[in-house]
Image (cartoon, rainbow, N blue to C red; front, top):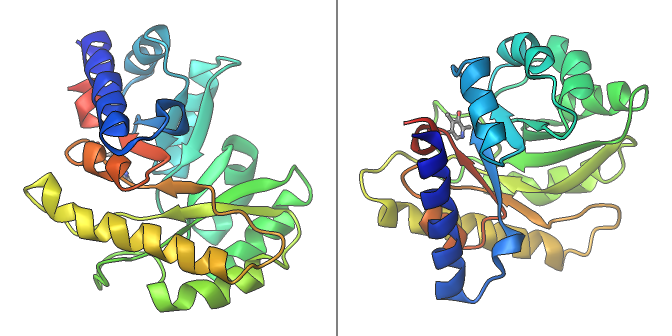
Length: 224
Ligand SMILES: *Cc1c(COP(=O)(O)O)cnc(C)c1O
């Protein structure tokens, strides 16, 4: 049941925070609602969670108006094509999946017409050829360019690490994203923030929280 799942997930986030001395309020749950129905989403809202992640603009475009709840927020967590940027800027409160300067320029252009757009830079920590996201060594250079783009508010980093069976195996990847954040902060680049780390999914979010995640993206553990 969704409400039972939410209770368990909140308890596990809190326990992970306690193990490493973090404030549980510093972690936000992004309920990943891709492929889920409006009814399922409403059940999560009734259970008290108001932040959802969708990975396809078109699917979100169909569902968001139907959920139609003033307190609910939507984050884009999947790939964004340039021709969908206009809609994405209008629909989402944050884009987790920014992965190129070209895309950033398009978001900037559109955001100037709508409202400033919070974004995260997606990093391919495992250097997997099939995955989107920039390489870690490109991050500082790209962040410097994003800092100069109007309309874009860089707030941190996101990653989807290589698939593993055991959550513990994801720890080094989460740690490398947290380290990259520190490296970027050390550059003292004006006009950007690095407060968010979007990492951790259903099977490994507790480990991600221990390593500093501020946004955990959880789908199957919520919906079953
Ligand atoms: C589907 C998805 C998730 C959630 O995955 P679960 O294993 O169902 O928790 C998280 N992040 C991204 C980018 C996704 O596409």
